[in-house]
Length: 105
Image (cartoon, rainbow, N blue to C red):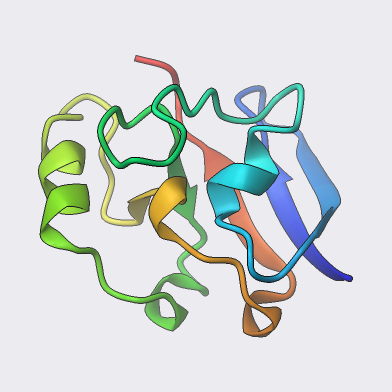
């Protein structure tokens, strides 16, 4: 099984098992400190907002227009490494991916 490093909202880093083939959101919403993902992955709520570690950002597929539109609405918390975890598939190539859970807001 692959691994993922997750920094929670308190700044604590966790190393977790992550199953390739799942969306990052599906992995994170199972954690007590993960994302709420209210829309269930339909790219309509932005409650699965994360920051991708800079070392990994270029290894991910580019954002689609619907994801970018939702991220544009997050003016207080959007960063250049912001992504919606429902739009990022975890693959074996992303073993040891580091993400940070974005603040609620």
